[in-house]
Amino acid sequence: MALLNSKIHEVIVTSMSENGQSHSAPMGISEVNGHIYIQPFKPSTTYNNLKAHRQCTINYTDDVRIFAGSLTGRRDWPTQRCQQIECEYLSHALAHSELEVIGFEDNDPRARFTAAVVNDVTHSPFRGFNRAQSAVIEAAVLTSRLSMLPTEKIQQEIAYLTIAMEKTAGDREWEAWGWLMAKIKDSGIAIQHD
Image (cartoon, rainbow, N blue to C red; front, side, top):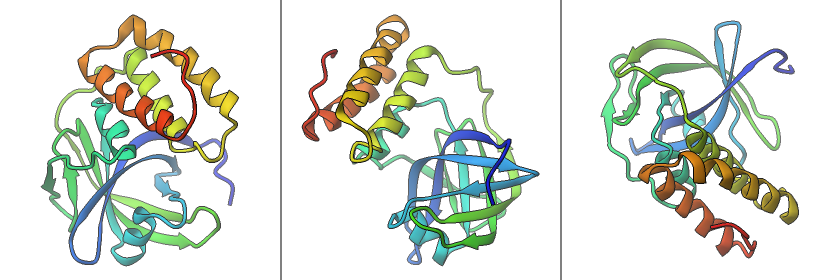
């Protein structure tokens, strides 16, 4: 089933392993007709966790360090227990949704989990992303696809995103950006703008 006319939200998905360990990963999720579609790549920890424990949380946050950190080995973000499911949500979340998986398609290279919202909780108001925060999220998406995209495309996108960073980034955005640029450079791709 194609997800036509779906909204894609860049979020942090927190899932639980069989032994109760929480795992948070950035992901674009889709919302269609009141259901949430989570499509992790295979193999991945999120895929394994959702197959074993069919609950998770969707975390909405403006702290872009969590997006960048998840891709660069910085996953130790504080969590709290959910209210209505056996899972955790990020303490840095402005809001979170507690989900129950109600359907599963084991497609390649990405599985599709269909989930229903059990509980929505708002912790703080979302005041929108500035251009630098959006740039970090876009750079995180690029970083997650280093092996799939041509080097020239990555270099062009980073050069363009650097403009937004230079105009509107604060300390948190620069910290997240630095983590991502180091990861890209470690992959062997030269970045023109630092």
